[in-house]
Structures are given as C-alpha cells and as structure tokens.
Image 1 (cartoon, rainbow, N blue to C red):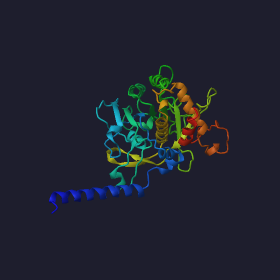
Image 2 (cartoon, rainbow, N blue to C red):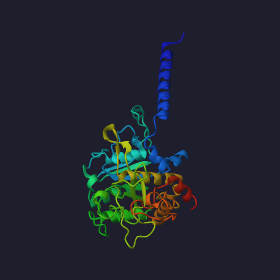
Image 3 (cartoon, rainbow, N blue to C red):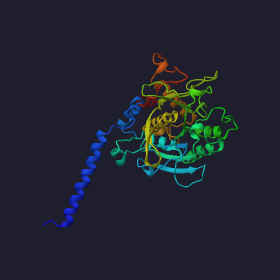
Image 4 (cartoon, helix red, strand yellow):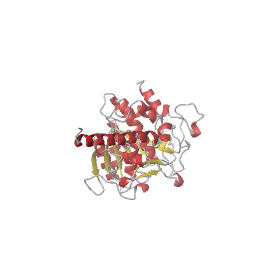
Length: 358
C-alpha cells in the first residue's frame, strides 16, 4: 500500500509540473514586450546568438531604482548610492530610473506573464550600479546639479561600470560645461578609462534651445535621439547643431533608437509605457552591453580597450553600420549625418559583425 506521504509527494510534483508547464506555455503564447524595438535595432539577433550582457556592468545615474519589482533579480544590482536623500536602501520616487532599468535587466516574471506582460531585458544578465542623483519630480526639467551628477558618475566609475547611462536632460545652458564643470571633468575621466558614456539628446524639440542636451553635447559622449515604430523621428527628440569644428563620428546626435511607448517596469510592482530620448538611451546602452558580452576584451579593463580610442572605434562602427532612415535613406555615404536622425538607427548585429574585423 502506498503511504499517505508518498501520495502527497506525488500530488505536489504533479501540481508543480502543471504550474511549470503553464508558465512555459504562457511564455510562448504571451508576446514578448517591445518586440518591434528589439527587431529594428537587431537586438533580437544578438539574443539568438546567446548574448545577454553577462559580465558587463552598467551604471544608471538617475532617479533611483525600485528593485522590489517582480521583474528584477536583486542580485543584478551591485551598488547603490543616494546622493539626494542619503537613504541606504534602493528606491525610486519618480519611476524614471526604474523604467530604464527594466528595459535593460528585466527577467520575465510569473506575475507579469499572468498579467499578459512578457518582459525581456536587453541585457538581462548584466549588473547594475545605481546612483540616485536626480530629485523627485525633476527629471523632466534637467533635475540634479553639477556636483551630485558628477558624484553619481564617479560612483559608477569606482564600482567598475563599463557603461554609464545619463538621461539627465539638461540644456547646454544649465551647466557650465567647461574645464571647471565637475560633471564634464568626471565624464572625461570615465572616457579616459575606456568607459562608455551614453546620454539622451533631449526632449525639447517643441521648445528647441538649438542643440542636444548636456552632457550628450560633449564629443566622446554618445548622444541618442528617439524614433517611433514607423522609424520616424519622435516629435520631442532634440535636433543637433553642427558647429564648424564638429567632425565624424562626433556629430550630434550620433544615433537614434526606439523611444516611444516603451513598456517597462515602474515603481510598486507596476508596468507602464513611457516615451523619451531616455528610453532610447537604454536601448543603445543595452546594445553596447551585448557587444561587450560578445567581445569582453573591449570592456573598460579588457586587453583591447585603449581608452578614448576604443570609444571612438565603437562610435565609428555605429556610424558606419547604422540603418539610414528618414532623410538619410537614399544616402549611400556611410558617414552621412542628419541633425535629427544622427548617423541613423543603431544596428546591433551589423556592429557585431563589423567589430569582428578589428
């Protein structure tokens, strides 16, 4: 006679098997989130090759991150510094940083699937360093100040970030970006160490100040504009202004990426769609993370990382391999540039193939 204990064990195993099978089926039938964005950037092709950002660290200088969201694995987050309120635990009082983190490292949760949401982070196995440098309700208006943003970037450097994501949205006039600017100095320090700094072009096109926002205006920073599902430049994406000394591949913005109606994580376990050049920055940072996973020798401490030279190499590759869209679509010059579309739409797989030549 089978004992009651064995019967209970068998019942538990059957229930667990049914649950796991249900999750597996749901992951098949519930469409992945932001499929269009992963497709147009060729991120999906690098995922198919097995790249997921493993071994890469991304610094997010923003409003913080609510790591309690069910889409996150807490072990993805390796360092935290609150430069605004000096809290010792992770939080986000503005949603913005949490939304960007979800684009990058969301894992695809059981709860999300049963809500009809199948999240997939661009670089789901990357590590994240978080510096809260922007106060509540201020990220839309270029919140934060020179010293807190500089300190946030410095924190990312000290915690071995390979990529630093900056979506602080400042007008060029909001920060004095000369040799006396702390933010400029620490960005230059990061780049001298071979750390990629990726920043939003800005969302001021409806009230254009004449150029991309700080700090994406700086030469070696990768400035990112936003496009919609139709591959058209977003109505809010800032226009670059090419100064007489602007040279390839540093014309602004450098590239564009998906930035409209991007579904991602929000605070308190919620999900939501946001639009902005910040979301586009997360896509470009994610592409770089996948490339550094594929070619770890180009990480900031890698054998082939030659500091500013490596940053310039990647920028040249992005320019050469970008998909020419909008006003560029009939232009066969690999370095053709548009003040809205930059060198074009970033192409992860083409960049991956090009980088293999070096």
